[in-house]
Image: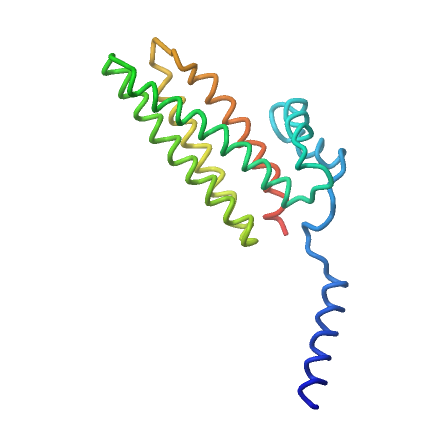
Length: 181
């Protein structure tokens, strides 16, 4: 009988605690909140349109929005990584082939960083996210730097690097609120 009473009290205390201290990320974001986050990127309009066009962002909390932004960046990076790899195989110019290989390696590392961010979001290890965001961004910047000297850009890597950089900047702003708490 005593264990039932103890168990009941622990359950009651847990319920009271959870109602007093809801998780930081449980609040649904408004359009104003999303616009405010997007204002921290270099293109508020594009950021807002991108996030609002994704049906997953309806009634989303801050963690969910960060997860969606990571997913969008990952999908784009994976797509570009596949394209770069196809150009590695197609290129007959050894110099250009080496540039594509280098960029492929950068994208592979950036994708890994984005996957680590996904895991941090799931586990609640928000304070670790900024380092991974910086690492992912640095990988794309390195590809951009290596590719800067290429005369031929059949894969339009320079433009695609900018797209991924922008998506990573959205990951940065959507996850930055989480790491503050």
